[in-house]
Amino acid sequence: TEDRKAEGIVPEMTVAENITLALLPKVSRNGILNEDRQREIVARFIRDLGIKCSGPNQKVRELSGGNQQKVLLARWLAMNPKLLILDEPTRGIDVGAKGEIQRLILKLADDGLGVLMISSEIEEVMEGADRIFVLREGVSVAELEGQAANVEDVLAAMAHGGSPVEAAA
Image (cartoon, rainbow, N blue to C red; front, top):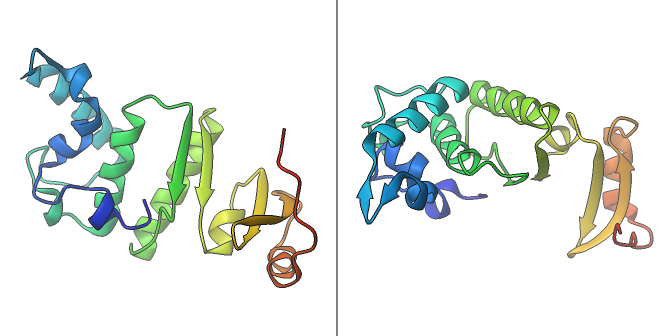
């Protein structure tokens, strides 16, 4: 989410609670939480995503922005999606965490997960993209092949646009 603090994480909840929030129907029965199942899921994501925290019971508000973003990412990855839609996934995090998140996104895509990334940072979009769509006022004005595109192509499409691209079938 573009604003993880307002729309994504629940700062007063723990790392474990935030990660399994979307999974409550799968980790509970008759309203009773299966703590062993929750612990197993949370431990896996803390390890796999490299979430730096004192433990699963640490409040998310106490984490760095990059680790908060990883917790939010873990929540949706725990749902085993086929497509992950990321809106400004590295906004508001430090350079080191930004690199970690970008590498993680590339690995997820390499592993076969569909990733749709929305970003205002050209370099972020271009890194590992198969296709790049440039939008102006909600209309697609250019489609570029990710590996063949360069920053100048994207900037030119942003500046001049051209005729809207037909929606992909």
